[in-house]
Amino acid sequence: MNESTDLAGAGSNVRWCILRTSGSRTLALAESLANAGIDAWTPAATASRLVRRGATMVKAERTAPILPTFVFVRSPHLPALADILADPWHRHPAFSLFRYQGRYPLVGEASIASLRGAEQEAIEALQLERDVADREQRRLERIANLRTEQARRKALRQVRREFSDGARVEVAEMTPLAGLTGVVQSSDGRTAIVDFGGALVMKIEAWRLSPRDVVDMEA
View 1 (spheres, one colour):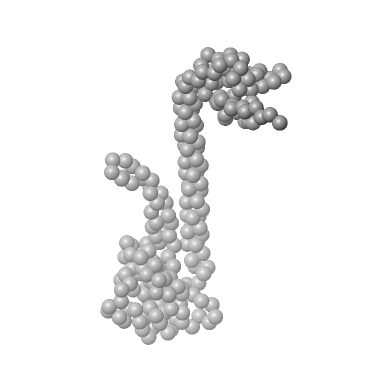
View 2 (cartoon, rainbow, N blue to C red):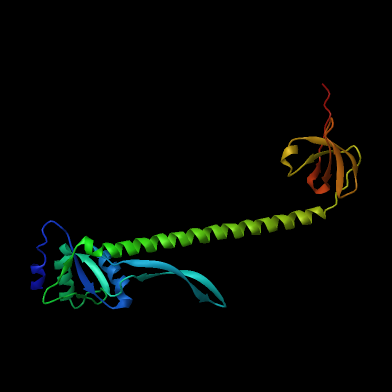
């Protein structure tokens, strides 16, 4: 490709040449060239949308090119691009070098700065959306866990446990009373009045109580 040599004289500043392809192949071309070791880039944005899965609609992320049909390749790769285009058996998506007035124009970083900015804005917007979705998911999980715990406690409250007066018991799931042993003063199967010594006498749900086995040891 003789005309590419007219454009490679960009000095030490690396510039970008422009490739054209079909809109549906834009991302695939950039990825294919990159996988072949060619510095290729096209601005892209990932967004979530509702898609049907079976009988339900769910959110799914989809990446699309911001500038369909355009792929940028750093100018030092022009010879490699020429070799690819000269090979009728190359496996990359079909593309052509953008040509203007008989030449293949190169663009600098300043020319694609707005595209980079748009891509960064899309990244930040996606991250914000993900953060919001994560917070909502955690909120729903907390609600589900709370409902599960409430259902568990409701079921436990229906449990009857009979304790004889004077029985020694321990309390479960009540942190302030952890490790304490009390003596049952009275019980109706659902609740019990437990004396923990001194002025600490409490009415406690029976499901929280378990017998405390005591073995007297003689010296």
